[in-house]
Image (cartoon, rainbow, N blue to C red; front, side):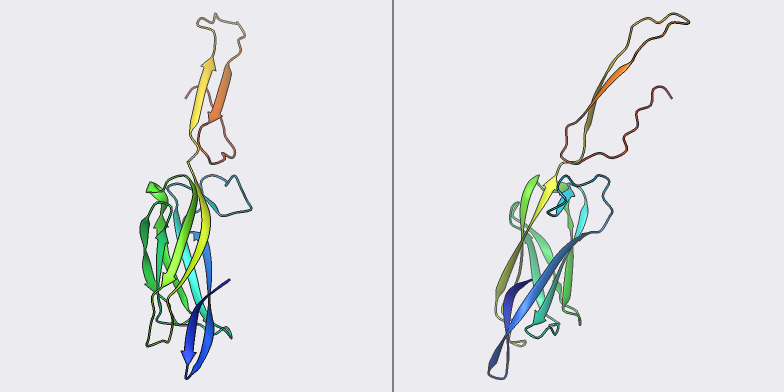
Length: 171
């Protein structure tokens, strides 16, 4: 959690905390290569969530939160916090570059709510989808009753892991 905002009630200033989380809208097709940090495959739709709370844990509603991918300089959208202080946008990563991305979440000053402008940042990784390259080595002629060996070499040229790969020869 990051302290982001200030809310004034009467003459007393109160700190507001913005909690943010990222979750998948769709389940991933491939496993992430790094489990320790948020890593997603380019093309996934990701839910970016943020929650605004005051210093004693009460949610702040009706606050507009903006979301931006600073790495690719793409505005992702905005949402207004609900009664639970939650806001979310859906990020379609189809056109995102691969590598680390800084997600910027902020609000502008809201005088009616006594909230000052604040900013928070979150880093996520976008990896390329798994791309399979393969080559097959087999004899050019096989006579009835002969035994031969087929060698298949598979390379993953993308950044995402592949799980449970099955190679089938023929139809």
